[in-house]
Amino acid sequence: MESEKVFLQCQDLTKTYISGFVRTTYILAVKNVWFDVKKGEVIALVGESGSGKTTIAKMILRLIKPTAGHIYLDGKDIFSYNDRDYYQKVQAIFQDPYSACNPFYRVDRILNKAFDLRGDSLPLDEKKRIVESTSGLVGLNPEEFLGRYPHQLSGGQLQRLLIARTLIIGSDLLIADEPTSMIDASLRAGILNLLLDLKKEEQFSVLFITHDIAQTQYLADRVIVMRKGEIVEMDPTEKVLARPVHPYTKELLASVPRLYEKWGS
Image (cartoon, rainbow, N blue to C red; front, side, top):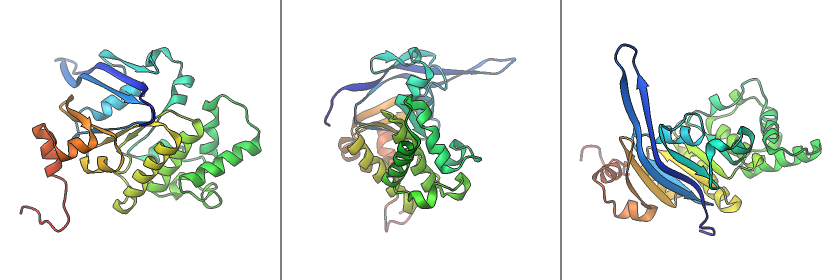
C-alpha cells in the first residue's frame, strides 16, 4: 500500500427500515458498522443476500440516509458535499449494467456526458482523445464500440464502459456492487483483473461487494464479512481465507465449489 491515508470512514453506521400501515414493522438492515477505506485500497464486502452489503453501498452513494452513524469522505461528512463535488469523487458500477445506461445514447455520448462532472471545459478534440484512450485502457476498441448503443454490447463490455466512465470523471472511489454476477463466468476474471490493474495504475479505492468470497483473493486487500447487518469478521484477505475465525466465514469458504469434487461428497 503506497498510501495509508484514510479516504472513507463509516462510523457506527445503522439503517432501520420502517414498513406497514396498520402495524408498523421495523427492519434492522445494518447495525453499528465501523470500517474505513484507505487511498488506493480495495475492500471486499462479503455476505449472503440480505446481509446489508447493498444497503451500505446505497448509504455511501447518498441514495438513502443512515438512521444513525456517520460517513466521512476525505474527513468531511458526505452530506456536506454538493452533488457535483461528491459524485466526481464517488462513482459506482452495479449488478445490472444495462439499467445504468441511457438506452437512447450511443456509447460515445455516454462517455462524453462524464465530462459534465469534471467541471472543466475541454476542446472537443481533447475530449475525443480522452474518450478513445480510456476506451482502449479498459479493453474496448474505440473504432468498434463508440458508435453502438448499450443493447448492442454484452454485459462484460458494458461493465468496462462504466469503468471507463469512472476513469474519465476522475473518481477517487469506485463502489462495485456485484459487478460480475450477470456476466459469463469466462469473463469474470477479466473484469476482476481490469479493476486490479486500474487500481494499481490509477490509485483509486474500490469497495467491492460480492456474495462470492472466492473472488476476494483476486482483488481485495482486506475482507469484511457481514451477516444479518453486522460485521462478523474483518482482516487482510490472506488471513481471512487461510485462517477464518467466525463460523459464518468458515461456512462461506466451505460453500465455494471445488474442481473435481462431487456435490454431496
